[in-house]
Amino acid sequence: MSRLRRYVSEHEFVRHFLTLLSGSAIAQAIPIAASVVLTRLYSPADYGVLALYTSVITAVVTIAAWRYDVAIVLPRTDAEARALMRLASRLVTATAAVVTVLMVALGGHVAEWLGAPGLAPWLYVAGLNIWILGQTQIYISWLNRRKSYATMSGSRLLQSAGTSGTQLAAGFARAGTPGLIGGTFVGQIIGLALLARRSRPEPGEPRRGTRAETTGLARKYWRMPVLNGPTALIDAFRLNGINILIGRVFGNALLGQFSLAWRTVQAPLTLVNGALSQIYYQKFATTERGGMGTLTVWCVTRSAAFGVVPFAALFFVAEPAFGFVFGEQWRVAGRLAELLVPWLYLNFITSPLSTVFLVVERQAVSLVFSVAYMAAPLLTLLLVDASLERVVLLISLEMAALLVVFIGLALWVARDWDRRASRPAPAGVV
Image 1 (cartoon, helix red, strand yellow):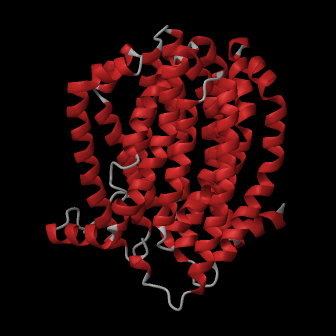
Image 2 (tube, rainbow, N blue to C red):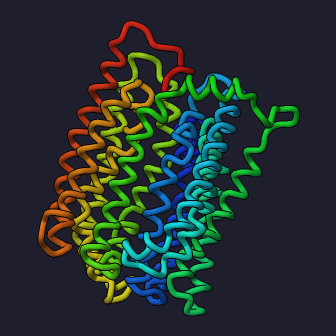
Image 3 (cartoon, rainbow, N blue to C red):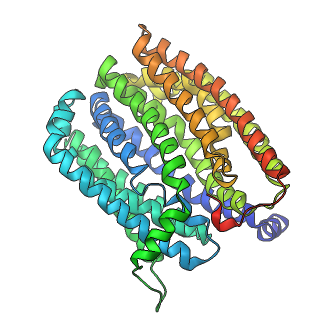
């Protein structure tokens, strides 16, 4: 045991990974444990409406700061990173205001088109939800830069406990869909409060920037909105478009089944890759030329080996396990979880690789790939006339094949970066 403690203390990567992993493990365990009760208090249709609401919000949150929040990790100085925080915060506020106006005017029509009229009142406050999540992402980028992983883990834990606790209380009160959606609001606000408190500027540190400073930063990191922004938007459109199309084609009850399957299987992905991605981003951003290809290969092989056993087990036991844990009405979700394994296993392997394209200035490559990666599942849902299970299996195999291509692209751009004659200044690496 003493040898293990010494090893952890001497290896910064392992120490940070375990810090994030331990907090994330508890944060993921809370909603999974709560779901044993929640799935008996709420119907598949309730979960379907929650999935639709979440899809609308997260699609916008991804680009609410025009991706300048992602760049906070990159500058040499904390002063420039703070200035990026201010720029990103202003953009999030502006985006949230625009969404609020649009939803007040069109929220009812959007809810009708999605086949969920009860969603309308929540769309009216979508702008507020976007602001909360946008600010959260800004603070997470800052804390990642400062390697404050304990705070990040604590925020996830508080958010998870707040969300699950509120949903349980509302469920016992027979609140229905408002209980599920309202619970997410409560958890997000609690998590944001901790992040904001731990990210406050030091005494004497400027709290407002000049217009010239803001304009200069917007130009310096122009690749974020111009190249990385469309990639992120396409990815968000893919993930949330799948939910929306399943709801429209198969109904909210089957969307609820798919949503539970996705969220439950994603738990181990989020648990490990959430920690790995943040740490790898910081490492990729500071890796010297000649080491990027090696780090990329190491990332792929470690993730592949780590995921084999749990995903193989999931493939064979998900359907009976879902029926036993969540109730017999959720066996369809278990079957869908089994069918998603090929896609999610490859996603587990490739998730930390996305930041390679940012650091080596090859966002155009990831943008082209993301178009194909978005088109495959959405076209399958639109064009294939079959049961949900058959459609999900086809999508899973398509996406797994595409992610194999993604691994090849990541290795290619990383090794090309290593071969270049000289590395640009890190502050311009966007």
